[in-house]
Image 1 (tube, one colour):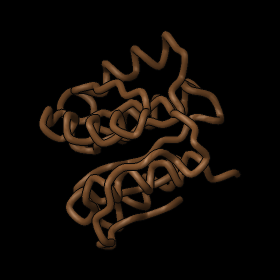
Image 2 (tube, rainbow, N blue to C red; image 1 turned 90 degrees about the vertical axis):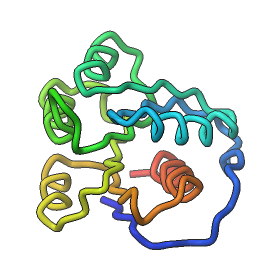
Image 3 (cartoon, helix red, strand yellow; image 1 turned 180 degrees about the vertical axis):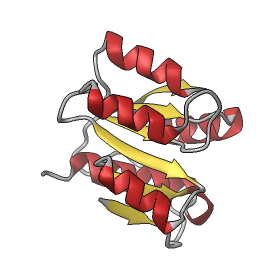
Length: 146
């Protein structure tokens, strides 16, 4: 699992090194953050679907097809990000190639450990990463081979 919390120089979103376009699901109860991250990914040619809650993304994953990655907030009403991740793993939603990345302000060691136990592919702390870093780290995780 990758954990990102360091500050790097700001760079604009650019197409991926491989030139591929990916399908990204963003899950957060904060509409402003959803829009901000969606703009960054769309500007680089990726398909983005934003969900303002965990139950909505679970419904979409059950219907398929799976995205390349799900960026998942932890603190949300109704069902939190860990609850969503638990259901994704138990129901094998998205299959083995879908990456799940926690994107949260919750960076306590206990949260990171819980995410690790649920086999998250990456953990990005929002407060420590500007949108271009979130973009770059997400693409890096998607393109990383197992």
